[in-house]
Image 1 (cartoon, rainbow over the protein chains, first blue to last red):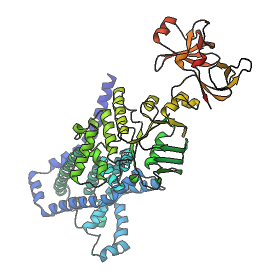
Image 2: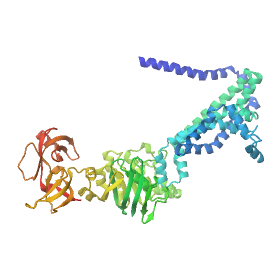
Image 3: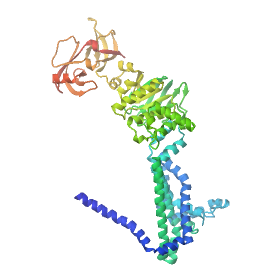
Image 4: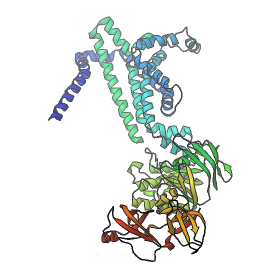
Length: 261
Length: 352
């Protein structure tokens, strides 16, 4: 009897949290009329913005993963002085306000800085450019990939890597045939999280690149200029697109991992 | 020939120190020792997974210490097989082949050939998770053989298997050795060692305390540790003393207990072994031809490898081996007083 009461209390408390997560989303979808949905989807400004947000987040995730995955592997496998400090640095973007991160990035990437000048000399510009948006997205979302991949690599038994080496495999082959496939689920989960986090970024991007306008900024701008009613359709469409992409990527990742395993 | 010389590795808990270990081509060497005696570390040093502090490993005169793991001529089979769970049996076996850039057709044919030799041909498309313990061990051996190692290093290869599978894998290991493969096998199981080894090394606290042909280790254990480990009971350090009047030689233990024996040696230090099965138990003193008789108390009665072991505390701590029937017939119980006797001719003397 006691057990069932406890279970009931847990269900009620958990249910309330779920309701809290779902209710605003349901409300926003219901607040928008079919006509408004239609107009929003047909609005080239909106579709361009959603497209930009999706491809920049995807490109940024893939580009930065080239360094993030090796870093995660090092963090999982090697012991070295200052490892804790490096872990704190990796987690830093999670704890600092994203607008502050944007300001910090601006001071680092603006046209007056060495890096900014160097980029300008080869025709690249971070400020007000998709490149800057990608950098801002990556800055705030990298910890999700690095930490997930690090956990994945930590779960790969070291003796399997040793066995591969004894069988004559080079360290590179061990990484690509043993470590990475076995940590695959966590790495892909980290990539999905980084991509999703990049899509939703506002604070850092608004400082680096107001234009071209990513969708979170467009929602904010429409809300500030025209009010809630005009912001809701864009927000609803963007949430729907994010959900579809999120579910699609998860499904693809699962299929791929099922093939591996 | 493999020669390990002056190998030393210091850990917090213990130090591995191998003065010299020679493994000849085609030998089956078993290193026998308790867990923590340094057996696995020695294999890992040989394979290059752990770096030694000093010493060398030679193979036909070439110092292997400078070679990276990938280039060492050894194939290590891990205690838990360490099969790659995301690969099929075929992919596991061909892993070492792929390190040597064979063409796809040749790779397939080599993998199938090795699988056929190890009776794995029907399992090639299976994953490790779906295999039995014996099948996993066969795959681990096949995968290692694909590297064509000069010496197989086996880390407790039978420990995770039940009795039936142990017999099966022992047969495979014997066959591999007959085919000319040199094997260095570590285990804590004495029976496993004597059933496979041409040579046995007994390891204690990071050192090889005795090494030699398997029969010699059994016949002449050179320390209490080796005797205990090899299952020999009633093993005592003695000094031989010759009685000038009767000309009879007696072995005196360190506790000044005399043991009569039949030997052509007259004086000196050594050890005696009194085989458990040679000790006769009686409830009262009996007049027989046995020269050695001790009155003692039964401390324990336990099932042994070949019968019932009766542990007796007399002037000497003795272990007698009797049958279940004898135990029942005599009604022996812990705490009971018994007489233990054995003939002088049954006592084996080993010179130190």
